[in-house]
Image (tube, rainbow, N blue to C red; front, side, top):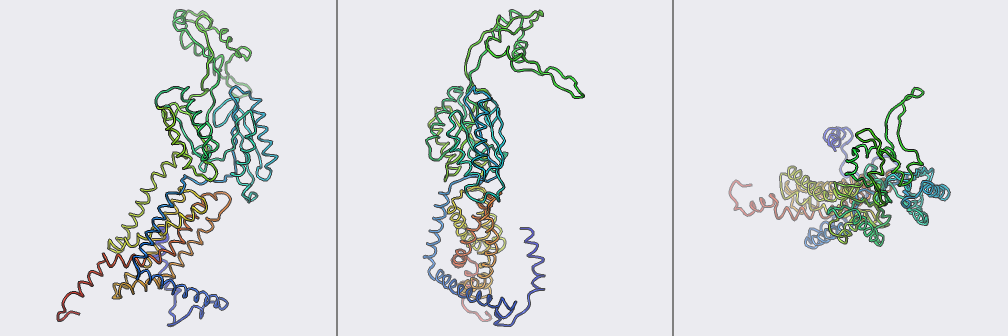
Length: 579
């Protein structure tokens, strides 16, 4: 924008003085230029002048039947509001980033061999049955986004180059859908094919990121019961798909019960008890040694045969304050229980992370609204919060209205300073819905949601609609101040300003057309913003050029300073010397 201002103020006058030459009166475009282009110029002028005559007749009709066209404008504005509220919401469009992720979760206490077998089945399917789409697959056992464990696994799927995947069924979304249908037949594991989010730092998959919180201190068992109830409701909802807990299931645990009174009587310190059992069963770093010029760490741990069963705890001995070894069995016992293998907290509350996606044809905004409604059916004391992309989406939706209001305020103040008038900027701002409705219609027809890029496109459309109105109002105002009647000045402005409006709108429209039809890497963002801007260009060109003259005439007649001044001068009695 700054560069365009410099070009307009500095370079454009110089170029005009250098390139533009005076022409004779009545000169036609077909008389000059390159010889083989003269037929095209003549044909273009015939079409343009004929279209301009029809356009002026429509503008004249709007000035003659003001109430009819004002009613049409109100209907267009109401339609814009209606369609805008019906648009699904999202944060960012889905992107084909050339990769897909597969998350595998087996039942608790499954072995690493069982996990490896499932991962091999996943890899073999993708490499054998998806050759056109998949280039390579890397699998990892023992860890996933849910956590670490022998029953967890991940697969990173690299897709072929975008140029080799030019069909819709070769895109990452189609691949994930087919993979889910195939992986659902695996009976001994939950396998999810997921696509990464548009911003990799904001989560691990697209869709929503939901945190179920125990705000009332209900306990782990009730929190897990609420989670299962929530997953059951989500499975029956047509708005949601791939809803899953992003955590590890409860596993059997052996709880060591220490009788602290006995331990104290035997002179066994608490720290010694804890360090002994943690070292024997979990390992501990104790020292370094040098071998072959390299420093290596020493970890201490009980040998595998002596840490396999619960009664192996009784084989441990702890040194007391007197330096004697005291057996664990003298002050401890144990019992079996179940619990979470990892501590999950969110904002200080016990939590369970639940992730999922919107069903085909639905948006993340609809999915998030559905998840919010489920919390009302859960027991009292449970709450929710959003994380990752979902949190950003909530923030962006709350900021949209103030952003538009501030943009319109800035436009109004700039126009008020430009025209040194309050009413004229109002006549220009009235055309803003005429540009916005084009962006809404174009985006809705292509099934795209109301996301950040759509909002950026609408802001651009606001500027374009304002520019088209300014071109007409500025010229009409100048002619009106020179002495022409208000209607004649407005019709003259509409006639002379139509060509530059069409030139700038066509240049801008064809400039964003490649964005609207983009494909390949980054196509999601390009299509979203290009579609919104292109739709706004079309309606702001055809509608603003018709309604902008009408608004200027109506506002100038009611509130304009020039009309009031002329009315006062015509009503004043004639005096000698007055001209």
